[in-house]
Image (cartoon, rainbow over all chains, first blue to last red):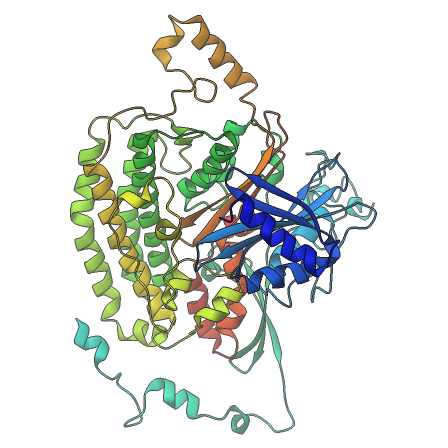
Length: 170
Length: 422
């Protein structure tokens, strides 16, 4: 793992390229995490790939509600040669949940970005096929959001239909 | 046995293998020149060869697969959402139901993430007990892959024998935790109970006879010409493509990349054990099969070493803030009673932070992301499930092959839909 000093060095390199890019550096429990501005995520990941982090292990979404900006997208990078891991995060608000897609550089992000879109409603600009992946395609809402209630939803089976005709159209 | 695999396969045309015969046919000659017809065929979601409820929309040209679109989400049960409504230790039974063939791995990844957040040390004995169960689970998962995968390839008997061996492992699980599947044995800070008397003897009996059984299972397949022809040289994908698609586990190792988190980033005392990482060469179905077979043998070695070196001591952290007190303390100690009450009603609180804990599951990197907001319930639990990511490799593997090879590709991919959909 990059230690706290190594993380600051990486952050400084990114700041030299674009002064606005790095928003925060966190070193927690031996793990380095870098928060960058959402529009610069592709350049940041490409820069880190040049430093050896050439495997994107995971992309996942987080809802920081009620904090602002609300949504977080985390990119878990792995350097298989040096056996190093680090996290790159972006934060976007509910009013403008746009993050550039990294699928062109990292094909593995395809399904995972679709899942984040499905669950949180974060829109990945430039994604080749941004559709729902786990929820039904006519589903309304993004269920993994923190203010989305648990339960209280009619079950998607046809036995509901005689009692609640057209209930899904609401 | 080895010379059988070397011998050229019998063929209708002298000097030509079956694959060469197939390749020699220009499909254009067989079809009407003005008739470029593509057929869209829906495969699944309820199809025995899809290992669950995976739906594939395939575009066929004759028998050739030109395009595959996987449609998933049929067993999406919102486990990650439900986890946010449970106390930390009550989440364990839920996450175990994600990838329902490697339940110990799910629990391990989750517990590891929470332990990282708590900065909690797991006693050595608990780590060894975890390793024993993880490796038994790896064997059970690979056996089920072999059984159902063999069935897809037309090898019927391997199905029954694979199932029979897996049952012996489930008996062992039942002995340690009372459950054959989804045992809730791993807890934050250790394991739920110490192993009972006779457990070691039972595991020893299994590990003594299992390598022989693997040989027998392998004989069923390694001399079966039909199975071999459907696997050898079919569906090769090189390591660079796999890495760009994020594929890990036996699929990556079959392509010659020896990445295994047990060696690279040892967790739960894996650094104490001597084992090898089997790798393939070209990454075809045959390599994938050989890698998994050899992994089972290595797992047996790890289990034996863990039993030999099993240390004495606590099976769960002695920190009563996180682990339930032993039953006998409840009758004599007021503090134990208070801790028990607090843990069962509210659960323990976890300092705010985020942790991603990756482990090597039978299908690749299983990472659990947990975010804590300081309360007694996780603010976010996410599993980076290897099946979900590895599924993206299916179109690469099966494009421009016969539809019969698509079924083999699916069997060798070993996707678990519970893990994909969560």
